[in-house]
Length: 286
Figure (cartoon, rainbow, N blue to C red):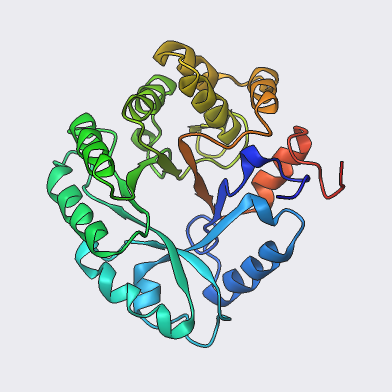
């Protein structure tokens, strides 16, 4: 582990360059990912996230070198994920994780969750993340995931924290409740969408208030330390960076608990914020 990226931040940011709002072409995304993996900040970067539809269309062929590690995003339905996976081995590509939605907002997540858990049973140890809407059936879905994980399956949760509509941005209290629920079930989780900057902020173009990824990290540390929903929500709602940054700084040499990480269409944006806040050393050894 480089001393330039503290242990707490290892693998925090998956490379989601091909997803909105970045929408990089696949060749450009693969080239940029190689550059990230060779850079001084490589320890910060997780796998390259790719849609199952892109992989299943054979678009990786001829673009990748042996050893590329990706996260496969199930945009074609759970039942089509094995087909997409079959395209990886001939290209020397490994799926470090699989992520797929199990229901739309308002739908019962249990049928899709059962289907995804059944897939995890056949995959031989690849971590699988079930994207669960923060609506109807959430807590029972977390119970089902926790039961499957207790039975030895590498399954965990994933939640959406932003998007193109206001209702896709959970409030600090809603997100705090989810973090504490995962804590109580010893259930790791990932996040997706909306985490563009380190500290909570309002986007002047859309008017949406975005969660900050350092807020989420501080809130998760507090939850794991025993804080309850109201105290966790206060950290998520903070717009002054001092409180959240200092809490994160005191844990910088520890392994990150509970929160696996999140995808960002830009690696440079979170990296710049972390350097600005003094949480990453900006390319210079200590």
